[in-house]
Image (cartoon, rainbow, N blue to C red):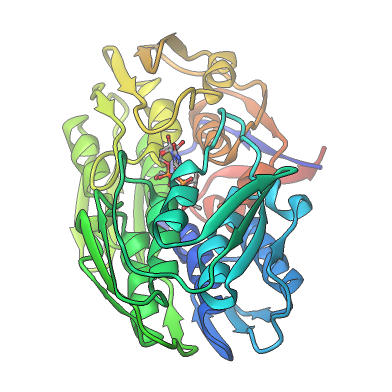
Length: 417
Ligand code: EPZ
């Protein structure tokens, strides 16, 4: 296993390009199962999760090639509908094959995903949605076993806007007979990107990005070619890197409106954020002010930026109150940030981040993808060396993050543990 070593104290300066959105490419990959033939997906980041999803599709019989950030997925040879535990346990997003398999093959055997570092990750909304569309679902020996002679459209209302359940249902409904209406749907840009891809395949999805999505089922969908939208969480992570080091960073190929909720908080804390068409410039300063946040589904403050934001707020004046409302216990980064000198108290789903004059480097351990990013950010500003172990977590969601940060002037390297 590798570790990342950061020597803090340097201001980041220069330009960085954001890659394709992990959480858009994963469902677009499984949506290819809705058609027979070869689809092409461009601007795909080189991530561990993309490789895992590639293996899931290959296990189903698809032929997948991945060169130069372009995936080609040929589903002509798909001859299985089983997503096994050994793959699903490493990536919860494998559940995204459930809808497409039920819709295209009338059956699916998908391992229940385990939990993750911060707690259980249920899939009850996915299962209930498939049942609403007419599938018969049993849970047996840790597997979701689904059968559907033919899916039929229905109206489905979510108690909470689940990104995954919205995506799975949109895909399944694409080939169902009749109309499906999803109410209280997730509004994330990645959902809109998935809807756009299904429409490129010949589907009829409308309302994506709003809380009500309508899908007119069609008899057949065809392979298509699509370019993945920029990753708004990678964008936010580099914004935080420029801010925490009081640097001056330009982020290219991003979508400023996708990080609007973040830019607003940054501006309130005294950080300069200038947005242009597909570019953001972030100018940090030594003394920033605390600004409270409550994470919420898009367009609210993203839960996937909570850990990174907490690292930034650990050196901001005043006390910052950060409430996590999307996931329970998504605070595994807190004990590690404390090792770097952060002053953080947890009360239920709320973190109180007190001011400290500075952080000091120490050996810390990454526990999950976004916690790893938070530890790197803290290391960029901590005095001395920070050694972050278990960096395989970060490779799940960031392509070559240490190279991109080094190109911005950080003293950071990846070394064998
Ligand atoms: C997606 O996860 C993202 N992953 C997550 O990003 C992100 O944190 C999350 O959406 C919220 O934005 C991908 O897109 C691959 P949810 P997902 O269903 O779909 C509960 C990252 O770092 N829930 O919107 O799993 C759930 O427990 C990852 O890139 C149920 O109760 O999230 C949570 O409390 C981490 N039952 C809430 O809904 C269900 O069947 C929102 O979860 C499904 C979800």
